[in-house]
Image 1 (cartoon, helix red, strand yellow):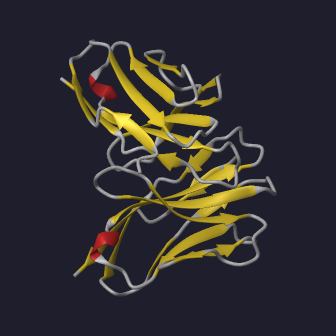
Image 2: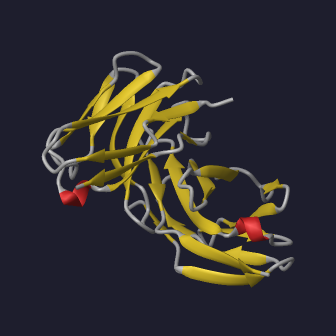
Image 3: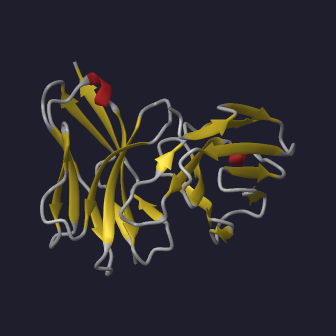
Length: 115
Length: 113
């Protein structure tokens, strides 16, 4: 069964420190994409970063990087130098080449950045 | 520049009174989605369209209907809203390729009184 698991319901991090949000996935497909989205309290889902299943290098976008360990089926998000504005809900998601255009979401991690 | 637009941003309706939420996109994406999201939960897919092809999730209540009259617009109709339908409703689009992200609108927060 296709599934995304986020085991951290909530996390705290001190401002300017780095934080890792965990995500594991389950699929037997070889072709898939992994995504992270940020959802502030306003409600809009903001795309952060993408990792393809065939990408050999970890994706990076500014302060965001994705630690992709294919054998372990994990796709952890690393936020460096946390800022107060990073306080939000973070969702990991997966799409499958054979997945009829659907995206599978994890349950999310609520991150709170402390001043 | 807004790419996925949802109207209204906030909607209050009475129990049992039909309501329509709208979504439009300027991205010309093939696929449009409607999600329901309750507080601190993952978005729950209600349905999606690939062009005019409609795909209903098995657990989407019959109370929820959708229309996509053209590429740009998609509507969510709730025929008889119950208190349990109060939620954030998110519209999203995608290119229809698994290696591209979804684009989300700002959402419509529905209150049922």
